[in-house]
Length: 137
Image (cartoon, rainbow, N blue to C red; front, top):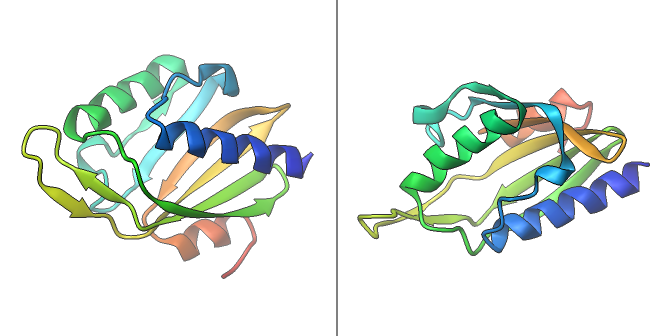
């Protein structure tokens, strides 16, 4: 099952890179979307969101500030029911200002059950994300 989870997360990251955020068939209806560990990355939207409507609210806020992300590198770590995505090399461009910002490396922990993401957690510290699922770098 864990390789299936890794494949699902890989697909979700590729869709994100392509600007496709309408992937709700892969999210459990009761998903918990935790953006509280964002540090300076997402301070304005640092909150825990619930369900599909919560995720939509998060994306509206985030996408309202930035143009679509086109480039980033990622490495996936398999932790059984969880998959850690270590993200680096991301650049964001302000939607209205056009100013490009280099984003510090970060991580997302996806927790899956029966092929659906039940929890998504953002970490500004990659080591903390790895430790949260029993992995280390």
